[in-house]
Amino acid sequence: MKIELKIKTNPISINSAYYGRNKKLNADSRKWRYNFLSQLQNDYNQNQMNLFRSYFNPKKHMIQVTFTWFQPIDYILTKSGELSLRSFDVDNIIKIPTDCIFDKKYNDKWLSLCRGHEAVMYKSMKTLVNLDINDKFIFSTTSIKRPSIDDQFHCFVEIEAISLFSR
Figure 1 (cartoon, rainbow, N blue to C red):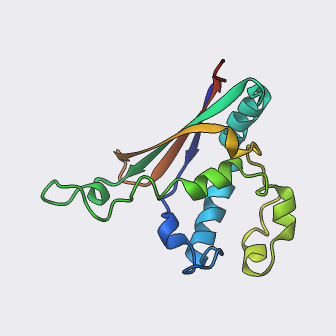
Figure 2: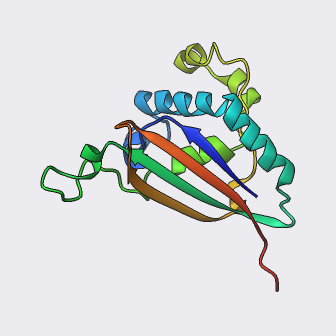
């Protein structure tokens, strides 16, 4: 069983997401998370997640996740055709979206606990639903960069339930 989530967003690096050694997301990262979580709420993504939740059995399955990050070609290659330093490190851009998709804290209860600027940001969001599956069931994560055909940032997330290994 495989689903695909579609999010219109640029990648976010874990290296730039936090205030120094503080474990709190900075303002830009909180806006990014809001954008990502709100797009998870659209009908297409909710239908995909409902299919996966109804199929996934933690006693029978593990999860394989593939993030495909579509970026404007100018972010991936320099004018001379070399890999650009503006392009993101594929290892550093999967932690925050993985948490947004899987972490049980990003649900209606979290929405009700938001305070300050985040409470204002999420005010229009009536509900917040993600997969709510512990990410310990992920046995493989892949992150891929691809040029975007429309010169925009996109993220496609393939989530596949794979049969558990047998002894």
